[in-house]
Length: 388
Image (cartoon, one colour):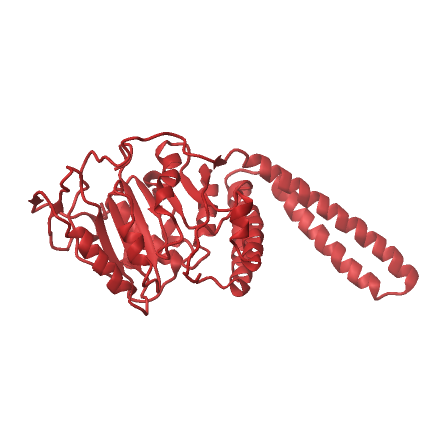
């Protein structure tokens, strides 16, 4: 427990043998439950998760309490015990979950989210199983959510020049391009490093969105930002140092950027319709639509003018330039309206907001007990009213 709030950590992993075990072992003591989700790995990831979960869950205890009914998705599982640490606190419970088939990075996170909501965890964080997220900075990620300053907090590795130097040029280019596209798509115009999966979200905020409908692949993070913005949820951009070792990223930017760009374009259109037309009308949608049409017309007219005789081509070209410039101005005006409408939704966090001297002290025990490993854990319906 952290500052009176229960904390859960989802650890999605795919072919992360050699890394995921260390991630589980280094989860801070104030975390109440860890959901380690193996997305049908083809290496020893599942065995490593179970091994480390078994060691942590079987740590020396002062007493065991039998007969406590498990909650949520594990209601049909046998009860082991509630382990009480020698310092009077509750030993973090590690829940191993395995997908029967590979479903994608987003699907693994959604599975962990569903289990955490079933346990009624107050704040749910995500730390990828590749070891790129320093557990020492977890409290900085969860603090804005616990303090009520943000519904969702995400890491940002792009605050200093030293962090930029640690990234390859191609990775830096891809990240910069996706940052711009995600700003336009999501409406969070002040965020950076949108592909950073070091995140935390409040229980209430997660319940307000239909996260089960979000993208199952690496675009999940961008899709989640869209859902949050449509609900006008405040978010925090928390700076932290980049951490790279010998792990290999599963992202291939040569394919990932074009694919995600199409997803972001769809997200942008959905946001415009839902936020500025369905919910309430705003003139920025007119600026965007007319600006796009004028720009396309200007470009098409310019191409046609190049292929016509000199005089006609010159006149047509001038007309096309005028129409294109007008389109650009309308798009700029629409973007200005958009930025103004979303101003203040992103909070930059440069340093810890509060000093929690007793952050590692817990005040209560989560319901349930150490469960058996859960296979095919991604089939939970997070909207099912009988989950709780």
